[in-house]
Length: 228
Image (cartoon, rainbow, N blue to C red; front, side, top):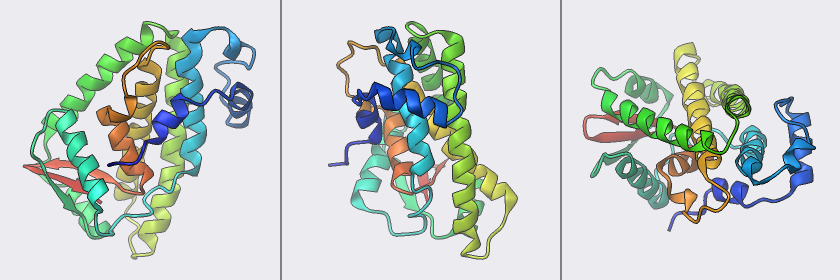
């Protein structure tokens, strides 16, 4: 069974004092500590704030190139099935050069991207039902920007070990991390205070779990999901 995703831990963390400190430490000024105590409608933003702190300490890309574990393959299959692509073959990518080739594959599946966009839009609509639009936009931007910056640094270091310094590839890796963090934040923000669903099983939560494990999902090409 796959490990419990950090998203679940974040959603269930009630350390409000720590949350307020995190806003200040990370330069996030969309909400003040006092405002964080003003009702259940901010539960989602609390969780997003904790995620913003988490992304700075994740082991981005630390496992790329290693043999895929059974848990990672199961997560990859669950993610692709969750966004509507059943029975995908999960293929491990060996190194940064192969990752660059996979990212630039001419038969990259645009339907995969469209499916993610539709799921993002649905989550955004849910989140806006109980969260102020401006506050939500600031929170999501902070999470994705933070993830992209830290992930780019990690990608540059990991790729350099194999003699790779392709700026385009590093941008792809950082962009994928930023997108995954944004999507994970949306899962948290969209969950209402009285929801009983298991957010750890949401496709975006599963996808983020792969990044937590140090992997880089590279998307779907044909009937194959490439996982670095």
